[in-house]
Length: 353
Image 1: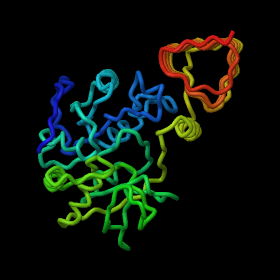
Image 2: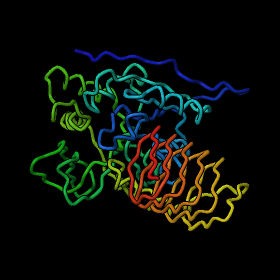
Image 3: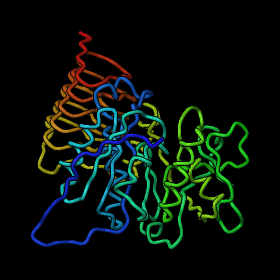
Image 4: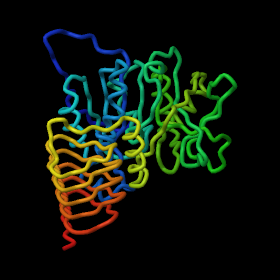
């Protein structure tokens, strides 16, 4: 039985000149509820959490766009309207589509919902909760289908690949109890043979082939290999986990060190010491404070008489007389009084006085 799907109106920027769209489309599933990151994901999707001055979603979209992809399909669900609003505001120059996943039944189910938009054209699938570093242009331009992998210590919670000596994938299995390899799938897939992909996805539904109760893209790709599709593996240079508070803060620190951070040149922070790397968005008021290292601050946030380090602070937040270390603070929050390590969601007010 084919899954139901709903498609929002595509958002197409029409300029003075007509441009032929890219043949390859990017597919980004961002329908997950992000339960491991609550309370933050009660009010905003995980993909919109800021890391090193950009949202997780922008860390995924920007390299694909820079490599030449101009058409994106976002599979949304939980708080999907916030994803749609963010994309409309941040990427008006892209052709974008939004497909709603009414029931979260796995990545395979999510990709199946895009069939009418994709047809038999090649696609690049990037799961919406992972940031990777790799040569995007080289992978997109590859004449063969590609799957991103990285060596991990314990692959049991991932899709796992075994490869031949030339790097072609021989076998795929989702979350194996006894892995035959330590090469984990990182959530990046360049697929040329989309007709075979959708044939295999349909087979999963008809035969009710699931892993841990979900229809997984890994199982569909394994089916494609059985039918003769050739996938070459490519190794990503870095794979950043964004699944938990601790890993998000670690990723924030790593990317700030690599990218150098950003402080608006026009803003003056009175009696404040900035210890780089930090990323401060526009419109912030910071006085009598020490900020950094490894701090990301969202727009229009006010910080007074505080010390902030190794933390992520959302936009439109007010911090007064606090000491924060390894903290994740949501947007529209207010914290007053002494503290050390906090994990606070959006629209929260805390007074330690």
